[in-house]
Image 1 (cartoon, rainbow, N blue to C red):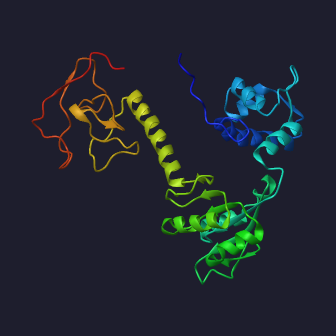
Image 2 (cartoon, rainbow, N blue to C red):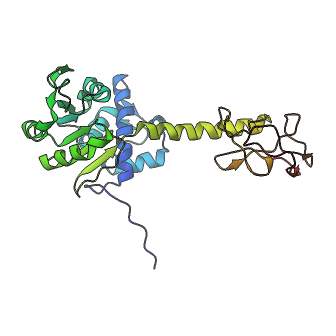
Image 3 (cartoon, rainbow, N blue to C red):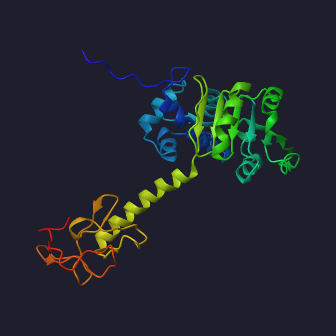
Length: 296
């Protein structure tokens, strides 16, 4: 008899996927409370959070909250329930290591205090920065990491250093007793079991957004019958590059071939790949390409 796969679960038996969605629910609920909304239906809350209502109800059932049929969820009570489950009903001192532009921005961010986090200290290794004031804090030397963590009894550390220094900072934070790290450095940290690391890489997020933007541009070009560039050196804004058999392609997906008139070919039309595109263009004697019988 086959066994169902066991999903990763948090410390209280809550699936990790549910834990990842709880902060989203809390953000929506907090906005509702600020607008004076007393109750919210599962459909309204699910739509605002970007999930379906069945998933939301199942997620909240792990907290023991089932709402009231015909009424919905009490916003204030649900805010308390989610906050309690996330551990936000207590004060969490946070130590930031790295007082560059990112570290300064994090130290000045006022949203931490309203969400249960308190910046306790900011440290840096640059002698020119140590002793300066940022967001009401005097920057302490990175050599004092262990003493600072112990003084504030901090369990959460934020790494906003260059990649070359991140692992050493991580090791020192862990040795000092930090069990949770938010890492902004573009490097994968090695930490012992029992230490949680959340990595924030803005460049990766932008690259993912660029991927989706490129695909949407590709679909638009194909739909409009526009001719993309075929020169691999100067692709258009959609990132279209030369493909096989005279068809432009992007991200491994071919576009319909284009006739010499610059428009999409008619079904069954024989066309020849474009020439005169520089050293990376196709040769003039390349074989012609037979357009598909019907374009998608």
